[in-house]
Length: 528
Image 1 (tube, rainbow, N blue to C red):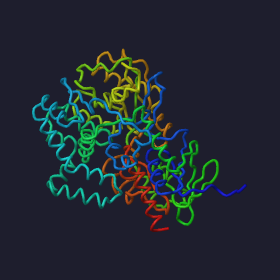
Image 2: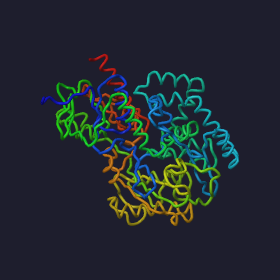
Image 3: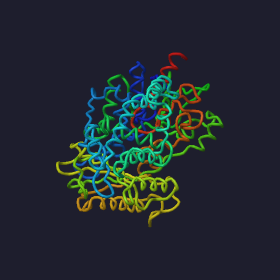
Image 4: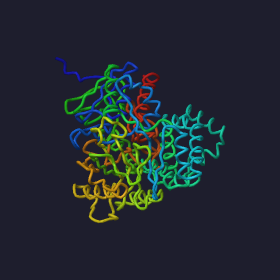
């Protein structure tokens, strides 16, 4: 029996969506690929469980995948051929107005426009202008954002589209804060929340530069493609990625935590797990957080001083508290929307777009909000297989500080122990009760997950951070994850960062994994 270590063309560290995308693309190229996952299941933050109540399926982490629907990477994998079925709610996004009524996005643009115009004259025309700009530049913009930096080909297509419509005007539009963008095009608070609420999916303050681009992009993807969910649960997306990989000859090994990346002569040559060493002939792709790569997995001697220094400035996005409910009936909204949306944006305070700015400002200042903004998912509305007929599988999450300075309410210490979590969950449920009187009476069971639980279930979710690092401008493009990077390549040959810590960042779109795989393939071809 040989004592030689196991070998593969490539090892992928982590079986999250980015790791699985990278592995699929390498396997398609004929590489022998092994994915090593520390936990007992693949998927990372794309997982489903039935722990809340019998018969109810809840997505443990992410749920809606508009970026996946828009991503040429995910679409190019043809996952529908491997069992993935997308499901859509009757309406895509909904925002209740502070004085009643709802603003709704439908997958039919004319229906969205008609509904907004009927609720507030002028909003329909404003939405038409926003969507018209999207139809002109949106496709090339998505391609540019998801391409390796700098996006030469996609950038040229985007530049051409912008030149045809007015380059200076488009650039100014894309750099505007979400609050300024919506103030120009929309009048009602409910309609403004369709964009401002989407900006809050990341950690971008709605009154900060870049937030308009993110909020508009998600809202317009929702308008064009919807906010789809995998039928049966988010885990069905993972299952399809794994089935496709195995069919292409790849392997996934769970319960195999990588303890160290092996380095020789300035190159990554393998990994070490508790079971032993594994050698790579071509590449190591790390679907892990940037601090985990540079501060834990690599030997200290293999990380230059300049990189260690720059990693000191790496900024995580805020933490998260998420509540899952099993309801015996649908949410009893005070003003029932004419069409049920899958995603709901519910600000605290008086329920305006300005309240979202206040909430984000508090979080970024280290303050636990007393009346938080809620991002809500009505999952049985989106996919009837999630719970028994007539019931609702519901969740809501809100952001909290990574480092708490004080609580704007009372009783939360910021340790995020069980007492803190239950107090925060009560605040969140109280906000829902105001918007949906009688909500509490419909609760069969609830589960609360906080920063500690998120990180324990997925090490990449440091302190409950969902985005792999802040999406603010100081840590984007060539500045992600640290200044001077911006691409999947690292300072070591054969080592690639393929997680959301790399450009283009968070979201289930597969681009960081695809960028890493393509870089590895290019180097193997031209730099054998």
